[in-house]
Image 1: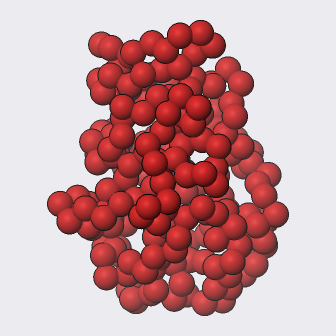
Image 2 (image 1 turned 180 degrees about the horizontal axis):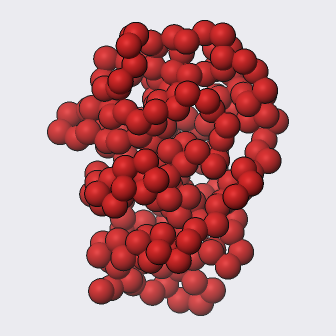
Length: 215
């Protein structure tokens, strides 16, 4: 499957050589899906003291995942080196998020101890999703596909169970994806996403009235 073309910022990140091995980021959403970026050297890792949640910010039209502090939670994700220490290009991709140092909270298999940052919407700058600012199913599909490839079905279950905000409305845009880095899922991948949405009773918005998903 061809990789998405992406933004100018992404092109900068893909085209610049990795010359500084000590700058890494921790991705916990769409960045876990390697088809959404071209970062080389990515590997699995875990982040302790944070939890994912669905939130909305005025800087974006739709709701996205963000990380919020939670001392009881550990989440899976990927770490990858920032090409040429070019945080500015990554900051552009992750606009609306703040870059937070997190090296002391990340467990990884690297033989050195790099600088690691996690992107999170600053406290006080986000609110709960609503029907005007819903979660895109095409975005969730990309995230779950990434977790399935990296962590298997148990990792997908952990993703759903360590993410808050499943009472957020979700727009079914699979037929006409709005997420710019959307990817095509196999039938079994789609069925896995749908299984967890039904398990959690997520409200699915269609062209007409909202419909609660139930088993």
